[in-house]
Image (cartoon, rainbow, N blue to C red; front, side):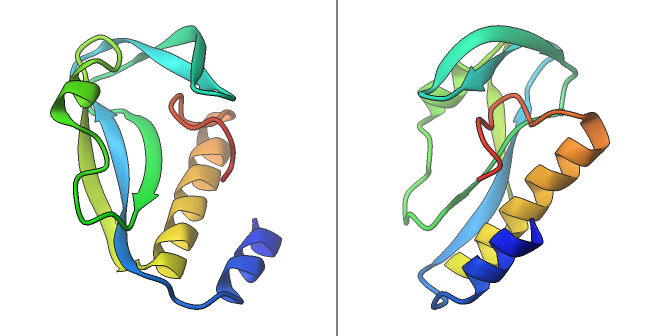
Length: 115
């Protein structure tokens, strides 16, 4: 993680954006994504559990309401967590994903890689 973060910090600041989590709307089964957006399995998430961490610098919402509603048992809710330039939000995302992995022994179900 530290080596990856060093590489990120050598870049220019980039556009403004935010790091977010997508959390389960209801307790139930949610897809576990693998490379290529394929869900080969599901896992149980409790309401408000993190399904995915991500970052965006888009001026519009990253996902449509319809897309968010189709994920898992009852859809997911986007939660902006950290605002900043592209470097700041990429580092925040990396810390969140690695922290989740250390605490749970696996990636969040919606994250395919350590990114």
